[in-house]
Image (cartoon, helix red, strand yellow):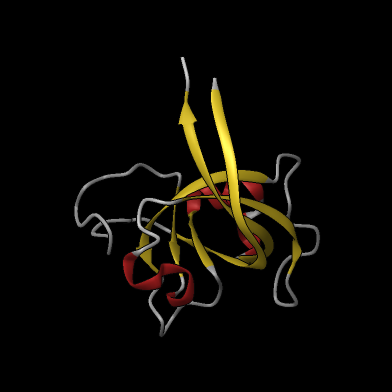
Length: 124
């Protein structure tokens, strides 16, 4: 069983990031799987966001994306493992390809999202 508690929430933009995901700003060459995201500078807070979990929900298309990109299960939980490079970062969160594909059509490239920090604890 998992217990989830939520912190601050916001609306924003999520983009798609393809592999390789290493090295990352938070963990170097330590593999943290694919349920991961890079945060923009504001969200990254100089590394304070490393290891934090965010629940991300696809809410719709952006003006540059595919119409109706969200899947029937538009919410995932990701761990922040990296900084989205300021020069190329086009959103608040840069989701791994695998994670983005779970909540939206990858052809969209970017989506509008609702995201909130959460803490996830497994309880047996």
